[in-house]
Amino acid sequence: MRIFAYNIIIMVGKGTITMRETRILEFKETITNTFLKTVSAFSNYNGGTILFGVDDNGNVKGLPDVKQACLDIENKINDSISPQPNYTLEIQNNDQTIKLTVKSGLQKPYLYKSKAYKRNDTATIEVDTLEFSRLVLDGKNISFEELPCKDQELSFKILQCKLKENIYIETFNQDTLKTLNLYDNINGYNNAAGLLADKNHFSGIDIVKFGENISIIQKRVTFEHISVLEIYEKALAVFRDYYQYEVIQGADRKMVEKIPEAAFILPPVLFLYPLKINFLFRAALPERLLQIL
Image (cartoon, rainbow, N blue to C red; front, side):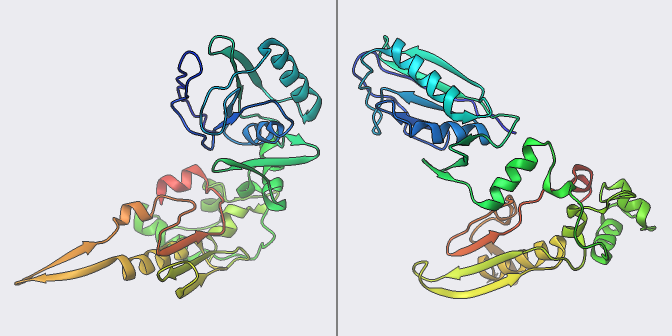
């Protein structure tokens, strides 16, 4: 889990904080129970900071009794968040504000009133059922890709070709899949293997080309239930169709990119406008396989 580091600069007196609210930074002018949802969100994901005594615009308003406020915050967290999150409290700005730093936790999910939360830009929202299941797996130190795949009748012709092209593997068998952490004798194929299989039950990607706004859909293509390797190639083909073209200059032809292809292939989840690529799966493949492919 990546932990973000950042500096917060506060002006002395009734001033203004030089940062705005972000995914990992929230302002609270007063102490109400709403901040507990954000504590849940920060604990479940990348951690973050809540500054009390600061309004939504970054203006330092101050708290009347910061020592009592610290006790109130501590009691609210300890009484309301389960399991116990990892956090620190610090009085700042000439005893006017409180900085609550919440670290990403290991015992996910962290619940407030039996619900888990996440950050969506500067808002805090409840996670859906699928995301809640992922948090439970994360808390057990189990990843989705390591779970047994419900499909055990799988073929890997596309993967075999890729391995032959990239590292010149001539022999492809079950031992190869074991080496790549895609198969074991007890559980069989895992979900990572399922994603790489020629056919599978997983959702793939939905590609939409919008017009002047998102209400106008000029073209839509869906690739699903096939190998992620094939999906990758098909998605690149769609990208090249819309964002690359040739220009003839005398006897030469020059390829022009409206958007660099390198920027397109960075995700796991990617949005490009007016061409929207929405990856519906987020499984991470085994590290050894990523190094090969």
